[in-house]
Image (cartoon, rainbow over all chains, first blue to last red):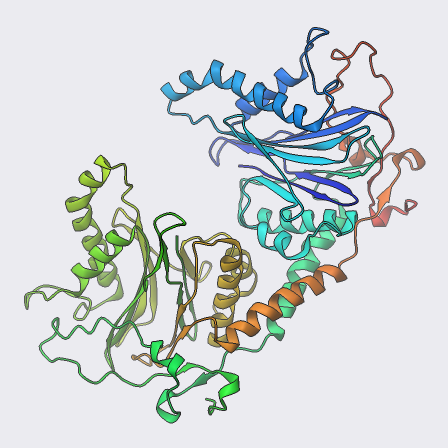
Length: 289
Length: 289
C-alpha cells in the first residue's frame, strides 16, 4: 500500500508521499513514489504514484524517456491539463501492453496518480489521474487529493484545510494526516518525501526526506497523540437518565432497545422488558444517575 | 455501508451502530443493525451486523426463530463461545441457501457480525464473526472490533481505549469515532443505537437511540471539531533550513529531490539543480528561514 496526499491552496502546493512497498507482509521494501519534473524559471511538476509498483514505474519510465522533437513531454507541454493528459496517455499505453497478461495472473491493473505543479504564466493546478487514464482536477471546495490508503488520514484534512490556509500549516496537516495513517496501516512507512511548492517560485524551494530521526516529525507524532488524548479527556462523559423517572418526550419514543424478544425461544414468555437508562438530554432537566 | 463498533473493557461492554442502508446513493434507507437477546438476570447478548442487508437479516431471522426443545439457541447456550458458534452456523446456513444464486447476479456473499455479552457465572466476552462463519475473540491487547466502514474512526480508538478505560469514557470514544466516520462517509448515518453494558448487570441498563436532536452527540460533534482545530493550530509549523548554508550531515544526504532530470527530454541539458530548503532539524542549530 501507499499513502500520498497533495493539497492546493492559495499560497501554493504541498505534496507528501511515503516510501513503503510490499508484496505481502513478508516482502517489504522501499521505493520513492514522488517524481519531480523541474525546469527552473519555467515549470515545476510533481507526480505522486500509488498502486502496483511495476505499473507505476512503467508509467514513470514512459514519461521520462527521450521523445522526438515534435512529441509533447512534461517538459514542453503548454498547460497543466495537457500534462495530465500526457500522464493519462502513458497509463493507457501501459494498460495496452500489460493488462491482458496481468489478468492471466489475476493481477488487477491498479495504479493512480496525482499530478500538480505550475507552468510559467499560469496558476498552480492539481489533478488526480485514474487507472483508466481519465482525470479530475481539484477545486476550491475540494482542494486536495489522496491516493492509496486514504481513509485514516482524511478526517484531519477535512477539518483544517481551506484554500486560505498558510502553506506551512498545510504541510503540517499533511504530516499529521500521514502520522495517523502510519499508526493504523503497517503497509505505509517512513521515510517520507515532503515537497512544499511556493506559488510562482517555478523551482523547488522546500523539500525534505523525513525519516525516524527527523525531530519535527517526531514532535508531531508525540504531541498530536498527547493532545488528542488531552482534549478527549476534557470532553464530558455521557450521563444517563432513567426514562421511568421522567415524562417521555416525543423524541424518546424511538429510544427502544432492539430486543429479539425470544418469547418463542423459551418455555416462559418474557413479558417484562426491564427498565433502562437513556443518554441524558442536558436541556430536559432530567435527573442524572 | 455501515459502521458498527464494540469494545470490551474491565467495566463492561459498549456497542454502537448506525442505521443507514443503501443500494446506491439514490436508494438510501434506514435499518437497525443491533439486536439484543436479553434474559434479565441470566444473560445479555448483543449482535451487530454489517454487509448485505438481506443476508444479515436472514441470519437474524434464523437466530430469532422458534427452535425445538433440544436445539441450542442464543437464549439457552451455556457459553458466549457457543453463542458465537451458533451465529457462525446461521451464517453458513444462509450461505448454503443463497450464495450460489447471489453469485449468478454477481452479488458478493458479504456479511459480518460482532457478538458480545455476558452469561451468568462467566465474564463478558466479545467476538467477531466473518462471512465464512468462523470467528475471533477480542483480547486485552486488542479490546475492540469494528465492522463496515472502520477506517475513519479507528485512530481515536487506538489512541485512547485500554482495558482500564472507564465505561462511559469508552462510550464517549465510540461516539467520537462515529462522528469522524459520519463526517467522511455519506453511507453511514444517524440515528445511532448505543448500548452500554455494565459488567454483571445481566440486563440492559443503559441504552439510547441518538438522532440529530441529541444534545450530547451535538456537543461531541461541535466540540471535537473545534478542539481538534485548536490543538492543530497550537503545534508549530515546520521551519526550513537552507542546506547551502549549513554543513551537510550524514542523514541529510538522503534528502535529495527525486528529480526526473529531463536532460534527454530537452535540447539543453539541465546541469544546475537549484538549491532548496530542507525541513529544519531543531537540534542542529541551523539558521531558520
